[in-house]
Length: 278
Image 1: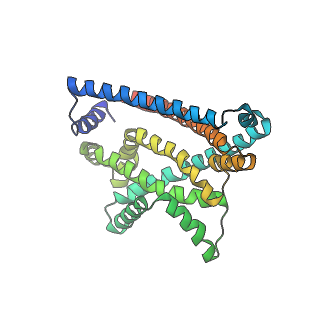
Image 2 (image 1 turned 90 degrees about the vertical axis):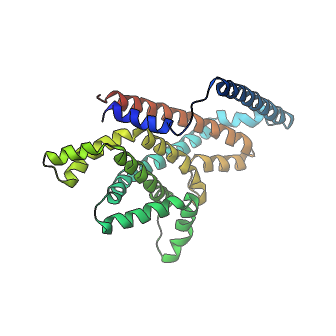
Image 3 (image 1 turned 180 degrees about the vertical axis):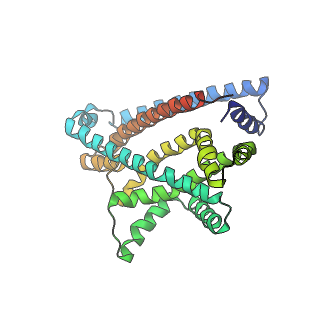
């Protein structure tokens, strides 16, 4: 893949919007400053209300300095990351297979894949989790809580990842496949050796962003009573009467985790982008 292709895609996206002029940029700066002032005022008001209602007393927060509580939250964070990693490891290759199926020349392969992708993209993940939770016992099939959470996440995200892969393949110049065919490669060798490697690099930022979203999807584990981080915070807060403090601490953990994953994603994106050739 070359940088010219990325520039063409960027130019197509930029063509959808007009670049703001001097007056537009000034309005954007003013709106940004006002938004920051309003946000700061809301934070100050929230902290003040916390203080008035005694939520900032040290006795309310001391709990989170105790090692058993820290270990409990670390175990919950590990469970959350496990859901994220396993879901990503299954959804990524499944999404690639679905994308290849949608690009197949055979309607017997292409149409079922298209129906799957469109239907699963339209169904809310929470509804799918409830379908597994309430529907499977009626069939006599029982699976662990971990997989009751993993399977809906995989099924939904595989459909989204399939569209990301397919869009990347469609964005590649036709000359790539024509050159491969001219060298004597068949359809599937061309896809495997020429198209897919370039499509993966082209779609890397979107793929990484979608994998990061899996971390947020894992918070739906409360539906199946899986002790991921958010549900564990709820249990801890209700048991110790520190619900607000527990959610604030866990929110901070999620912010740090997301920033860390975003930094890793940015590093991978730079590495992938740096390997392109003009």
